[in-house]
Image 1 (cartoon, one colour):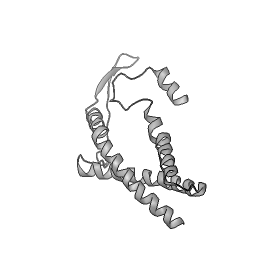
Image 2 (image 1 turned 120 degrees about the horizontal axis):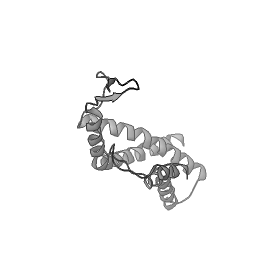
Image 3 (image 1 turned 90 degrees about the vertical axis):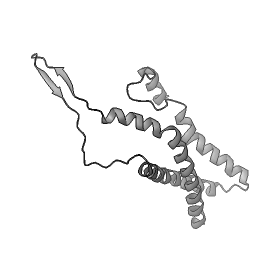
Image 4 (image 1 turned 30 degrees about the vertical axis):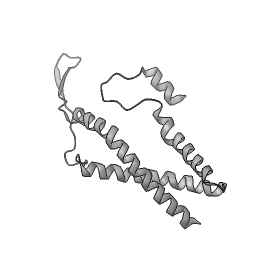
Length: 148
């Protein structure tokens, strides 16, 4: 029985990860690439101290740190992360589905839709991803979303 659960979760997790990677490549990755232009821009600023002297403020990144390049590295990294998450959720869903022991495929589809609604749909109803520095909802509204 465990073997069947693992195969089912692996296959459905792979399908879900590939679909999610496709959707992220169309909508999320362009937003990340735009945000990286802000992140990689020089951030040298002058600010004044209490004694009236000016001081430079610098922002440095570790040049040796690895980050995926645009293209196959980014897609492969995104697919790998999505695969881990999707297989994990599929294992939970397949295990719970097996414990519940429903008899029909339609019930399995309802379980899958419920999982999608809880783990994917509900979080997206709140605040969409935005570029740094863009106007978002007021702070109190954002906090209320996370609390309520």
